[in-house]
Image 1 (tube, rainbow, N blue to C red):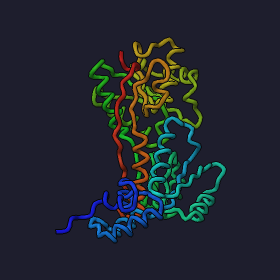
Image 2: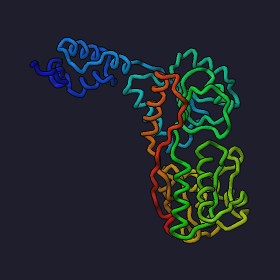
Image 3: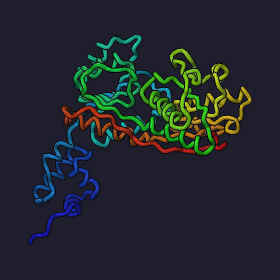
Image 4: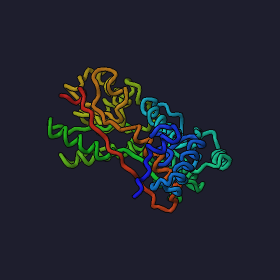
Amino acid sequence: MKKAVTIKEIAEQLNLSRNTVAKALNGQYVPKKTRELVLRKAQEMKYKSLNVSHIESGAKKYRILLVSGKPLNNMNYFVPLIKSIENNCYEKNYELFQYTYNGSKTPFKEVSDYVNDLKADGIVAIECFDKNFIANLVNLGKPVCFNDFSTSDVSANYNYDIISANDEQSVFRIVKSLHAKYGTTRFTFVGDNKHCRSFHDRYYGMLTGILSVRGAHNRPEDILCSDEVFNYGNPEALKTEILKLKYRPECFICCNDFVARGVCNALKLLNVNVPKNALVVGFDNVSEAFATAPAITSFSVDKEFLGTETIRTLVNRIENPNIPSRTIIVSTKLIPRASTEA
């Protein structure tokens, strides 16, 4: 019986690396001429694992539009995410375009015209939380993958998916853990819980955690100011809000690390020692969590994986537009630091 042709033998015939040949045969990005050369040689040598339909499908060159609802100012969080999206598009030979939407100045028709003129195959949406914008975006009829989502009900066609971190369960578990370790019962949430679904779920995770360990929790025990009018990076403003609280918190659960750093600075102004007199927890594990003392306990989200999963999910919907809408939850990792080491 004739021995089966291997990738190594095809590579030797073409004087190419085995890795390049494998990529071409598996539909991954290689230059078009190289791909054609490899496919011809594989057919000529009767390479049995050659699946032409699969290769052609994997070689499709999609046009993907990345839409952000505002400038992505949280650079420590978004840079690795965007870089991962760019790298995945480059490796797959997809064309990637970016558009920042200014809701107060830009009519949606401008976005619609841009999408249509671009002939985009799919859309990645980041920091897009306005329910009307989401409805208009989805109703364009293009597949959309959202990173995070709105807290409001959105009336729109369901040709979209959502990528999110495991926000609720992450916070629920640390509330339970801190109660078991220190007997902590007085938790205060800091952040605009209506800003986006992830902040809402983190808040809800705290509430359910509290209910599981002691019972009731009331709105006056939290700082939930709208971030459209309140500056969470201002320690003096946070100090004022902390002084308004009905009870003295034992632990501040913050919507992200930026807010957690602001809380730590506000507590310094109040001569409250972290972690001796109050614990602080953040989220996202960006530099604000560990750049200064005390280092803040946070949840690490694999931002590179989020980018990879975003492109994978969007392309899957482009190629299978009738599949049900999905919310994909990505696990987090707790990074304990000084701010909870009472």
